[in-house]
Image 1 (cartoon, rainbow, N blue to C red):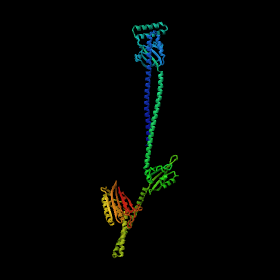
Image 2: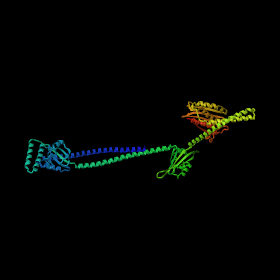
Image 3: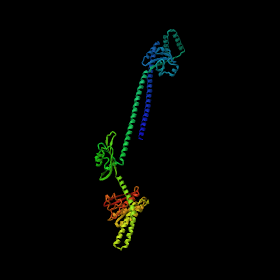
Image 4: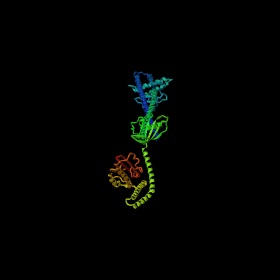
Length: 594
């Protein structure tokens, strides 16, 4: 699942880079096109203004020639030729409205058609300079600036005659026969004048666009290079951003993993101690701190010899040469209390064989030992139960016969005689033996409880009544407290009365000079608690572990089965019984039912 998430994250990053690259490329292309169009507009503006200025200069020169009465048409050609020699000018031409050349910087083209009538009409020349890129088969592509040709303060007919005279002079000089062409052309001009046709000449200046095209090419190259560099920088920034995000994401995942691992280690149900290669503790979790009686924060970076018990350190040294973990059950003593602990020591080694330290795993076996003890106790109780059943079967019937004969012989002897006394002792001992067998049968009897909803007030009242006579004779005061509104739980009332009666009688018998027996019944969370306390002599510490064992008793006349029966009844109901006792101050039995 984690690998799949990583693959999805990598795929998303790749698509993000591709998408951002496409957007950046589109933006850069749009900017490049915008810059290119701006360069074209700038070129057109510069060339247009330059051509317009040249036309104005040419018009001013033509006016000066007429005002000075140059008179000869060669003056016009000289002006055109002089102007055409300026840098970046390809040609200068004057045409009529039909597009026929009437003056040209290349005199050989006079009389040719420069532009057709349709082209002239499409250009729509006016008295304001205009421009256009012209593709011509006779001349290189040029940037033409054109307008109607006028001179300042000059009559248009005078200009027309001046131009026509120049064209006629060129025709006269350019024909081989001289006479025929000139006469014909002059005749035509005369007819035009006679008809009062006024020619509106047009001026065209062709400018060389190659320097601007070359400059534009350099600009395009620079722009493309700059765009590529910007794109690469943007891509680098995006990739770096993705890498940084991936780094932060990985770093966060690593921190989360570490926090998760630390949380797992801290809440493991076993103690964990990690020791570095220098022998100092690098980590100690909560359970280990509780087992060792140490503070998890203060022992960090302390030497392991100062924290762990000596027997654990010795186990670690004994297993130092082993490459596999070593496990032993040891007893450690903390705050004066010994606890059984299972110790596992394992070396921490890298794949390259580098030693990084050791791990100590400590498992508290106290509860396991307690459960094992309870299991052994139950096995022993089961064995005693089977034995009791066999004894009761084999002994009870003969015992009844013995009691019958003893009673018979007691009736034969004189009242108060030694024989009658002996017979009565025999009867008493037979009854005591029968009582022991009855208790054995009670102990060995299967726990076939008859459970039903029971009111604890009735149970406790029955117990107090049964204990009352023994308590009065022993000088013991019985104090009872039962909480109101106790829940009714499913119990076998008769068996619970028997268990509480056994505990109460033991408590009364433990108070030889009188005292107080307290019975307290209360609800705690989802449990029902019954506490029976006495102010007797208490139970020695060494006897607390075996007080519920069958046949253990400190009384001369006791059978040692009373508390064993109590525990059997309580555990048969799914409950638990605990004991707390202080020598000379008394004992408290606590029974809890869920």
